[in-house]
Length: 174
Image (spheres, rainbow, N blue to C red):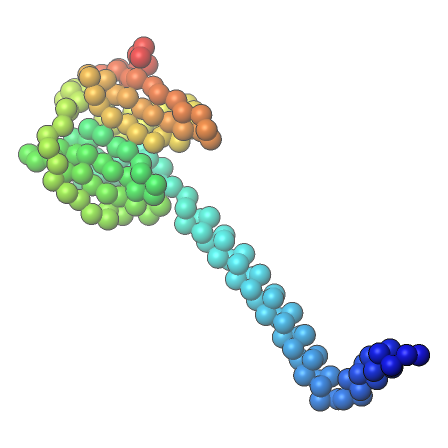
């Protein structure tokens, strides 16, 4: 046995014979396992709450709620990240900013008058509900423009546009 092998085996033997050192190492190892377990549990719980927090409120339900409050006529709905921007007009026009996960209003601001859908047309909530039943993707925008509803959807990388008649709800040619 050479000098380096002797010193290595001597160190190992000394560390095995030191009960305080062994107790500290065992405590460290067991607390590390407990700490690792605690970190993993917190990560899993945090991740699952993140997933549930990022579930978007169904657009047709959100719009129906706003319509029932009789704030005015909605001319446009657009989702930007986790916020729905809703343009609504009565005597004045406003843009409402609504959290897409909670459905709660974050803020609002005055905007210029918008092109409005016809008074005898289908409510925008009916348009949204119809498009949701088609299962073409998530609605990212509904806008009344050029006497028709334009609906934009996204499913993964695929984007789809629909044009709907405001009175009948039937699909129009682009």
